[in-house]
Length: 319
Ligand code: NAD
Image (tube, rainbow, N blue to C red):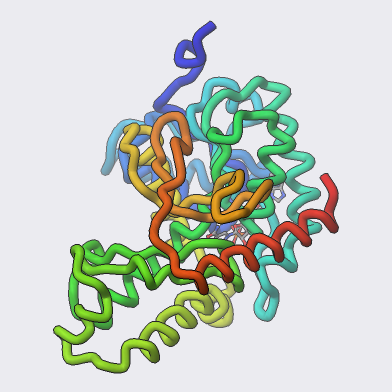
């Protein structure tokens, strides 16, 4: 049977209804992208409560069936989003979550395989690059159908910071964070521009001449933003929820948008066998292809270091 016959393109499943899963569900309810959404959590009452609460917004939006589901719901879903897993506590890095969340994934991902899930698997739980690599292995899905939210959120944070600094619409900023969604992430300054104008030139237009200091400050602010938010409110969820909605849009509407999702690399920049974030064309089939943006020697060196660091962690946690 052709895959398109068994997939309901209007159905999404969210596994994990904590801060991130619930905010994502709320965001997707308002998006009009799907007409059916099943929420799954090991805490069944939490999934039920979130479904009940979010359903009460439906009369103000588009018709949608939202309910606490089970793994049988993944059978015909077009997108399954996994946010289940421990989150960072104040002082913890994303990589501190590895063992706990790999174990959680070992209990979740095989459930999709059992039900012959054929849609797109979108990983959000952290450390997202490691867990995307793990999900590819455990799901048996073709690699292009398993992607992580990667640095889509970090890229949004970067655009926000640059837009703010230059006092322009952040949507006119074209810049990416690549590599790990985490402490070794890289701001790809060498390809950053504002509507085609190189960033250093745009800074000059705005009478900002300390470009190198600006770069460094913005990259650090972006990298540390999750720590700053977590130290104040214990979790981050709105930014990631909108990022996940954006990725779903690209998939469901077959937009072929270029997003810095996390996906398996095979030889790009000399990196092999690990999922990392690079700008890629994203559509109904998941990841179509990576987009080789211009990176300078230093950025490539740091990207390889980022991959090496993740690979070592993955090797220590054999799947
Ligand atoms: P949370 O603790 O609020 O929610 C986690 C949920 O997962 C809980 O409801 C829990 O019951 C559920 N869960 C745990 N084990 C499960 C299992 N085996 N099956 C089903 N459900 C299970 O955490 P959160 O703040 O929502 O964060 C969730 C994950 O998302 C964390 O790993 C966090 O680091 C990550 N996160 C990622 C990004 C990103 O950019 N990728 C951003 C923010 C948070």
